[in-house]
Length: 104
Image (cartoon, rainbow, N blue to C red; front, side, top):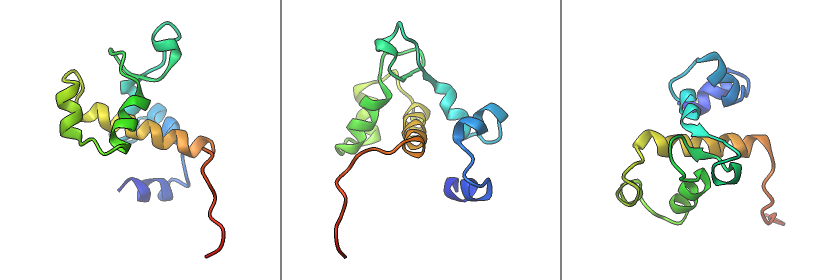
């Protein structure tokens, strides 16, 4: 379980884990590339011009992994997991403004 992993590691960032090579899940970030000359430096799946944010947008809008892989056959299951891992790390590193709830 990834949650348990982070709890045991005292909220260790996945980027630190990749550098140390501690878990197969952490190695997913090696599938992400950021190159200022490719897609204006947006995080992409390595070897493609497919933005991580595009994958996350499709998933958030209800597209299934199967549909995503059919639409983009150059992607793999691990690429989709890498996009999710990247999104999780981004959420840990900064606050995304969303409406706050008031009351109970």
